[in-house]
Image 1 (cartoon, rainbow, N blue to C red):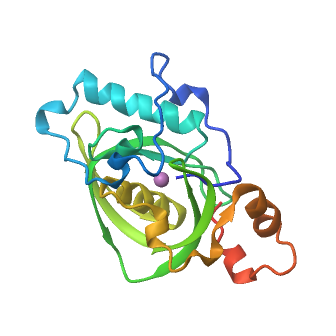
Image 2 (spheres, rainbow, N blue to C red; image 1 turned 30 degrees about the vertical axis):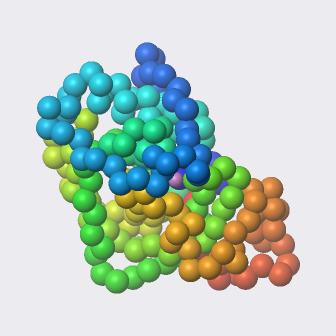
Length: 206
Ligand code: NI
């Protein structure tokens, strides 16, 4: 997922020195519309999985994304990386890779917010998402992890999770009405020029 303004730059320390920049595939590539396979037990902690996770983190950061799912680099496996830029209320959350995630909504509260996607470059749209979710997953070494996420973090996780099922943010929009190209989005929506629905502006993620 992409979000602008890009937020605090992530320190280079999050990028492993020997990691590689991967090619991000775009809408139209069939892997983006396929359901990814669970990572098999024997792959946990393997060089192949750890390298893939590191390469995804590097690619996400270098491409100015806040999330990247394995299908976006043409790997049909259920894992994604994400990070959360610093906000007024919360410090930056370092890049994390979640493997074989399961998510469920906590409560029924839905909020709209702006999303973009590295596989749909240049477009932003308003997407309704659950405000709060619970996540169970494994880390690259196989360690189980569970967490509760809300707001922007919950949005990023839901966006990336969708990629594992071949779903993109366009599919989740209530209508295409808010779709905007990046320069126009920055000028008319982030810039809050006259004529913009203020309620929509206030839901812009950090
Ligand atoms: Ni995406």
